[in-house]
Length: 352
Ligand code: KG4
Ligand code: ZN
Image (cartoon, rainbow, N blue to C red; front, side, top):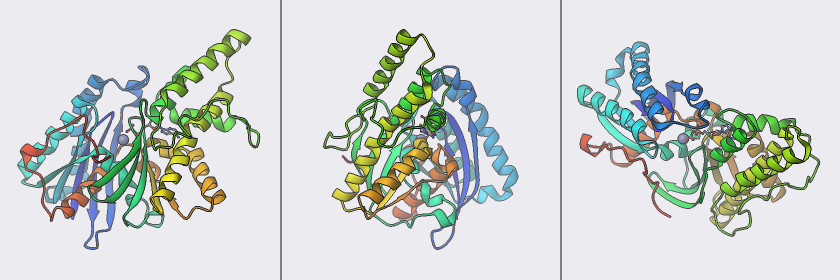
């Protein structure tokens, strides 16, 4: 079965073609993305109207590229599109295009949550790095827009254990990067700076990891960002020198990542779940991987953590296509009617 995925929820335009064989094993045939980083970097974040304008320009080009490379695309059996959450003007471009294709090609269409795409993204990894699709699993979804800890009991059966009360984790990386004079997206740049800092063993933390002992599964990042701001200001006024960016980046990164690891492993223990998936842009972070490995070893935790391949950590349409396929199968091979496909910028995963 051939599935066409379309993703335009934020600032990356994605079109992908995924094939699923009779055993249900997926294979990514094409996964095209068009990044808008250059356009938004000068504003320090995504500008919704500009993002939509870029989707309007790039989406037809990417669909055209797929058609060129895959001549029999009109036999794609299923069209899947992200309906939310995301930026309203961006979502409208993707849903409109997908509905038109479905209408003219007379193909089944399904709308899915962008978050659902991330939840199942590592199941598209290179085959030897792929987890088995077995329920329940736990998913820590950490991106520029989301920080959620979710128990996945089946397709469409999600319980959100906790989420950020204010900024998302990736957003905090981006804001702190800006304070340090670095361009958007800040996550990879902060990670690189932090790697330059030679920390001591058991180095005392400069910033308190927010909510690390809160006893629930929620997160918070706006206070941490403010603490970093004050530290930079006071360093500047004392020394008139450039703040020590690598030192600040390391300490910020530790404070930002440790609550993620602690709470995810606590949830795994409390709910007796042995498979953990970490997805979204922040799952690229190597220190996050290291912290998970270290904690699992130290506490002898019987759990395995899976990360998506790099191309699948960021927003992409292959993960959307696969999430759509899983929903299609769960519903007894039924899609959505065209009038049911409506974008919803605030679409929730559901449950709590
Ligand atoms: O999933 P994604 O591509 O888009 C959203 O849905 O938000 O995630 C982008 C976010 C940005 O905030 C970026 O700074 C962050 O992921 N990010 C990282 C790293 N790579 C990307 N954060 C920390 N460390 C990284 N290596
Ligand atoms: Zn995303």
